[in-house]
Image (tube, rainbow, N blue to C red; front, side):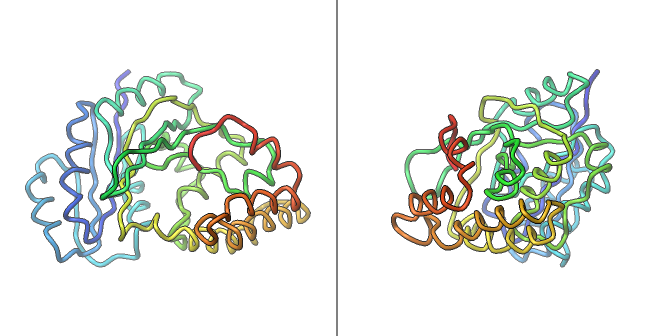
Length: 278
């Protein structure tokens, strides 16, 4: 059975990256409907989109409610079997969607995630963001939080229709919240142990604002469907990231880990596991 992809690209003022993102989808050679949801860019974005519009199922460029709303708009329009979204400064590696489609041939698989390369603009080298299974402990699942590499993650459309949409009030954590929501509901992903995409980090990227990620997650966690005792422990772990994180203090990574072990000794097994970059 040939599975069809529905891919949404949310974008705003990312014209210098957009051509690369579009080409990485269109060159995959698998059945794909592509949606480009631009937030009213005034750079070269619209001209780039128009060059490819005969291969794009739908596009628009107007002021919207932000990235998460654009992703949900793509999901609402999806008529394919598999949904993914690609930020316009990231891109897929050649053959990625074929590998994902092969994984979905297993009827028991409802979502798939793989590794991703992390490249910082202006720097040499790259790091691997490694996909890994969700922790079974709810405190660790919600308190770190667990999140597979976003551009290498794909879902059956029916799964997101059942559990979605992405929370529109979230600016930074819409992908992490969906991953945790699914894992907490017992929906585990199939994991491909190879890179499927590149996350491109640059000065204007939201990923450069890590402190705001965890502050937003702390507010989300206050309303999480956890027993109160587990919620308080998870909140303690998030607070450690905000106070001790590696972006806050030069030696914060180790300060955070010591604080985590004091807050919740169950972190020890998590920190000792084989893992990728976190």
